[in-house]
Figure (tube, one colour):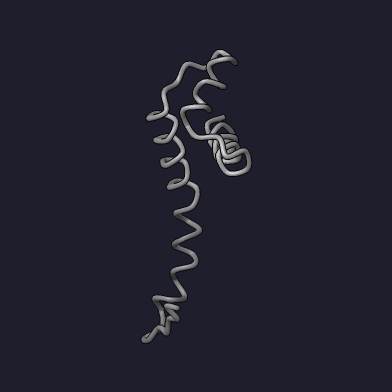
Length: 73
């Protein structure tokens, strides 16, 4: 449930350009009483929990090499 809520929050933020304080007002109309600080903390925590394994998986081949070339342009 929380992951679906955070996905909706992110979608609303990116596609509707709806800032957190407006999202809090919208959720209040549906009966969910939340503040923007909690909303953003939930998104941060869910993102960390869901994307950390993906990040670690992608990092493994990079850290296995003795040298890494990066284009910083």
